[in-house]
Amino acid sequence: MEDAKEDLGHRVWIQAEQRAAQGGVLFVRELGVKLAARHAEAADRVREYERQLAHVVRVLALTPGRDSLVQLLQLLEESQSAGGPGLLPPFVASLLAEHQQVDDLASIDFDRRGWNRLTELRACLFHELVVRGVEVEKSSPLHSWSLRRPAWHALSWLPGRRSEFEVGLNVAVDFPSRSISGSARGASTGLPDTGRMDPPTPRRSERLSLRDTATVDVHETIVAAVQAGGWGDCAAWVFMLDEPIAPDRVPALLPTLPMRCVDGLGPMDRFEVALRPAAEIWRLLFGTASMGGMYGSGVHGAYGRLWAWKSMAGLSGASADASAEEVEEQARRSTWFHFQADADWFHNDIDADYGIAALSPDRSRIAVLAATDAD
Image (cartoon, rainbow, N blue to C red; front, side, top):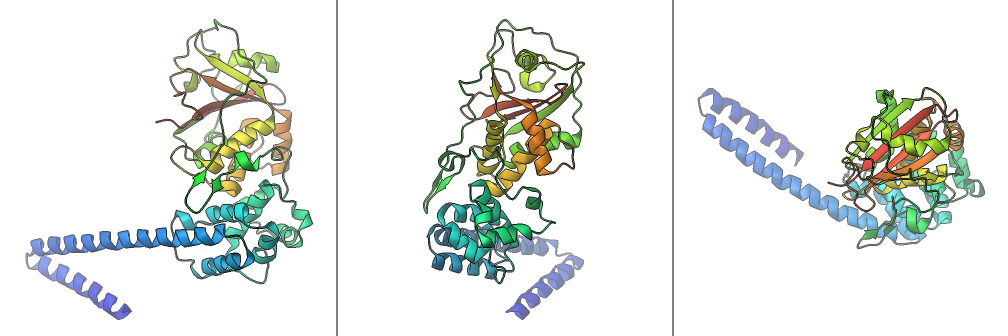
């Protein structure tokens, strides 16, 4: 069969070159049309095989029990060349964390004697379990793997235990619910009633002359969670203040900053803002990255955790080389705000717009993230 393929390829090359040299360019074009049609047919067949294989993987992942888990891992170990979104390790790990018993996952998937080609799946699954509240120290296989996680892997930057920001995650709300036939999710970006600090109207309409100091790297770090979640648009700004300000002055200051997300906001237009705990901001960013927007499924729990942390790092002003523990401390000492507005930039669809502002611990730096997922 392989010889036949090589012979066909050789004949196509020879025929195309010979006919073109003889002036038969029409023949060459028709040859190309036939090849393009065969390519499209083969691509359709590949996509159909990917869909079918993804369904088989989903059935095994969602069928609780050691037997189905072993068969799934064996299938993935033997099918490394297969592609498609339904086969990506972050997605499969998320399914396993939702439907399989922790003890089974720990004793089977994290057994160092097997599954040598499933490092990415194992890395994702570890953080799916951590962020869902599994205490790694109480499981010998998980604890052992946490001590020998590959240092080169991006997820190794994350802490091997849940931070104080992550403890409040609710499995029923902050994670998707999947079945054989579909899925549902319940994360919300709405502004809470508690902690409201809406500035009185009419507000001042003139803009401050502050300059956005966000570098390209800082901007990309701040918007990391939104971009990972595949939202429609996002932007970030960083402003260094002339003097430190008290947190209660931030709500009135935000609409006056030179930011696109408040363009067109009149002195009487809606601008709502609430003081939020750092944990709630992290939760909002995690939902954005892990479950995605209206037209995507996000990057799931493990990488959702990573990009939520990175956005928190950029917003709080942590150094580029800060550890997760250092980012957590910087974020804990910062003051966090959540806002929404009837400005031109936002579309004000339900759960499709939000703004986040962070006042640094020294109260002289304000960083802002604005996100929208509407068309």
